[in-house]
Image (tube, rainbow, N blue to C red; front, side):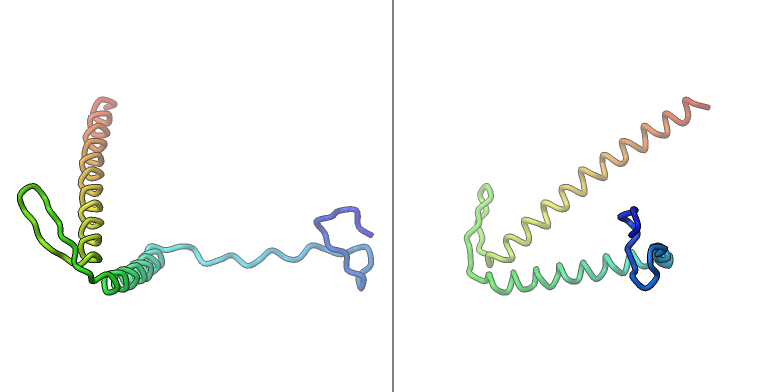
Length: 111
């Protein structure tokens, strides 16, 4: 029997079994493929959100400073999530501009 545990023993070949051939190379990841995957994932999230909003239709009263209004619970939570995402994107965009400005200054100083 073979002393190497990574090589399987094949009784038909006796003690001289060889390792299996390597798998064929996979297709490289392309931008179009990544975009397609992200698009499908986005549609799945939208379907889940649609189900959530349609199942949470009970009205809730909302108040902000002096304004008050009534919205379905699902819509209110969805709007809060969208506002949070927009706020995060705004802060991230400001940070990206800050880093780009610092990188340009650093590049100019190296010349």
